[in-house]
Length: 356
Image: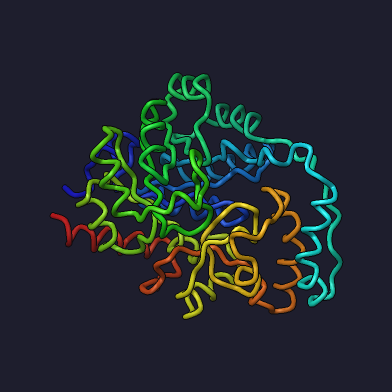
């Protein structure tokens, strides 16, 4: 059977289809539960949540499903360059974005560089709620954290954008590796080299990792339908992780404007930009991303996020979609489902027809 793989056996799921863990309000217990209840693995991107918020979210998840699910965190959730960050540089970079604030008639926000990491405290709560799967990006947790995950029976899944990162994850003895291709929407989760030096396409990355590691591979990036699932699995993946196709469903927490944008022809042109958060990520091209090329220095993560946040709110209120950063994968041509349940049904049925 096509759906019986190392990943389904490892995670205790029926189908090797994982919903990508999306943060910043995109993840919802409803979306997670819909995917898990259909036999896949629902996920929740919790890196922005406080430990208390993770506890409350997990209660809602457990009310919605009794099936396995995944909670995702960021190992490195604050750029080291924020330490002793120059106030003069902060003000200089804020002025770079002032014209956009002026255009929308709002003031620049007051910002503080005192932003502590939440990761360690988040992990403590994660061990308390005990999801079936703990996935992470932007690095590898400590040996102690991984050992405690194993002791508690929580499966660990790390993300790699290069072969070297996959080898590091295997050395750390994670249970599975997400091969995150260049096509994927959202942040480039690189951690050994800068994101701009880690632009490997998914199909190449799967084959590189398959040839050099024994850890099961989960393919992510540009997969939206059964053909993408089939191609990834033929190349050696044991499962796929799908983000954008689930983000546009009714169960997702993305704004209606965001969903409409991804379904429109405007999403045919995506770009990799750090203008939204300070870290490079794939999004629909807009006025700001076009004007802020890679060479332009922006604020470190997550300070850049805090700078842009009020601009995004105002742009949404004023209908200025040209100033909003819409996360998106590179392949949106065949998106059609507004229901996560219907999307899952089609993926399962059509993949079964392709792979016998």
